[in-house]
Each structure stands twice: as structure tokens, then as C-alpha cells.
Image (tube, rainbow, N blue to C red; front, side, top):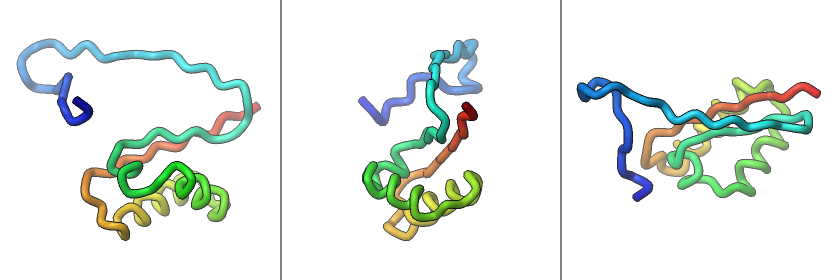
Length: 86
């Protein structure tokens, strides 16, 4: 069921977004991405690229998308990185 669309804009019914709170206790960055990235790169590869690049988050996100595309990019790829300050 992972490819089933459960909500969409413009279908006539009011959209009720799902909202979840998350609390982060440590400094660092967190990644949120679609399966377009995780189908092309393993968690270990994403971590390795993230640690090796040492870039600003916007450039790191671009590097991850580029690497997924270099490996075939079979789906839409979305990456969001958020830095948590202590």
C-alpha cells in the first residue's frame, strides 16, 4: 500500500492534513525524504555521503538528489534536511 495516494488537493473534499509532533533532544541534522531517494540509496550510503560532504544542508540535499539520479532516479526525489541547534 506504499504507493497508494491517501490525500490530494483539488479533488473536491476538504483536505485534513496529518500532523505529528516530534521532539529532538540532540544537536544535529535530521533528514526527511521520499522513497525516490531511499529506493536508490541505502541508509548507510545516505549517511556516508552526508558525513563525507561536510557541506551546507542545501548543498548536501542537492548532492543526495544528484547521486540518486546518477543511479537511475526512477521516481520523484524529495529531500528536506533540518538542523537542530542545541
